[in-house]
Image 1: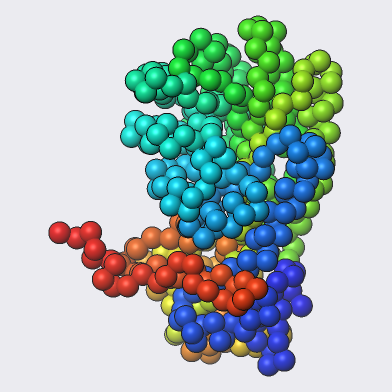
Image 2 (image 1 turned 60 degrees about the vertical axis):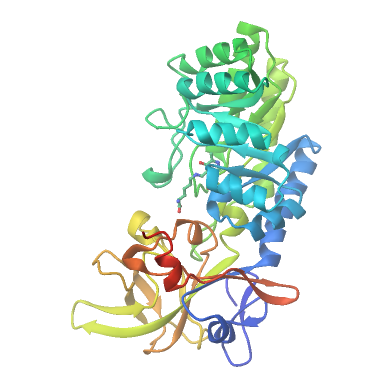
Amino acid sequence: MFFLDHLDTNRQGHLTIDGVDTLALAEEYGTPLYVMSEAAIRENCRRYRDSMERFYGGRGMVAYASKAFCCKAICRLVMEEGLGLDVVSAGELYTARAADFPMERVVFHGNNKTPDELVMALEYGVGRIVVDNLTELRLLDTLAAARGTAAPVMLRVKPGIDAHTHSFIRTGQIDSKFGFALETGEALSAVQEALKAPHLRLLGLHCHIGSQIFDIEPFCHAAKVMLEFMGLICRETGAALPELNLGGGFGIPYIQENDPVPYCRYMEKVSGVVKETCGKLGFPTPFILIEPGRSIVGTAGITLYRVGAVKTIPGVRTYVSVDGSMADDPRYALYQADYTFTSALRAEEPKTQVVTVAGRCCESGDLLGENVLLQEVEPGELIGVFCTGAYHYSMASNYNRIPRPPVVLVGEDGPRVIVRRETLEDLIRCDL
Ligand code: LLP
């Protein structure tokens, strides 16, 4: 019925996720409610893992970028699927350890990691620390020396690639706060310094060109640029770096018209470029890492809201207000992100009106979508928003002191809460 396999309708015409009636879920757990399909997440993990096996002969690792959605249950789930984990803060790292995630499969990112975070990474035994800048490089060398150890590092390089996506989530071009620039020679001198640092073990390089990218070409281009740079490093320093991390960024369909490339096509194409470039350079194919976040969990999630007031301003627009807001979904306010909305009650009925879906925050910009096609919904009706599994719960705030919604995972044995709803008491827990 919909463009996502785990979403459908039942005999009553209600929206279902993995066969579970969303009206029943809202009844049991309340709204707003994040719901995720466990099967869809596992399927995405397997697709990536199988492609890694098929196209790189298993000489690689898929590290789920937990910034997309981080909690203990998801860490356990991706661990069971044999993936690694990309973390970007002490909070994500702490969550990973609380879930008993194997630390050697953790990749630690961040453009301004604090000394405490670096110490924590060393103490936990994180497998790869991706160093962003010279300040961090020197600090990490000192911190590792104090512990009598050598830190396993990769260097973040910006390959100078401008992938077509929203400017806030574009990171590979030269004007970016992330990483060492290639064209200025900054990256090469950082590599030389890292190779000489007595307490750093330089494993390789990292790049990430942006997020929600539909084109294969920028990924191929990035792989080629990075490998050519590895060839140059080899010629200049004699060091054949054994690893290359190509980041994440693969797009997902938020609306039917979006047309993402299947991940296995991306893996096939990029692995072709990797092998060809290495062949030409006479350079051994490195161990490859990738870091998908959105494309592992994004399509798996939906958000359920209850409609409150419906306000039609004649000749202007109709506002459909819901019991959620930019606090649980800041993506429209931040990126004017497109979404698919539907009545969960009569999901099969045609969408006959164009509305603005408004949140309940005390702010005019608190909108979840404009020019949204929707059925003639009434106050009290349940609506569902598709593809909210990534960068929703993880970006949620307590703005206006609104408690964060829970996350329910629908698995083989039915739905279960993996993150409970915040209470009003939770909101004042840190107040003194
Ligand atoms: N690796 C690195 C180093 C990253 O910075 C990111 C995302 C990823 C991997 C995962 O990218 P993904 O596969 O999820 O596209 N809040 C924005 C997205 C920001 C992405 C930041 N970095 C949004 O809601 O669209």
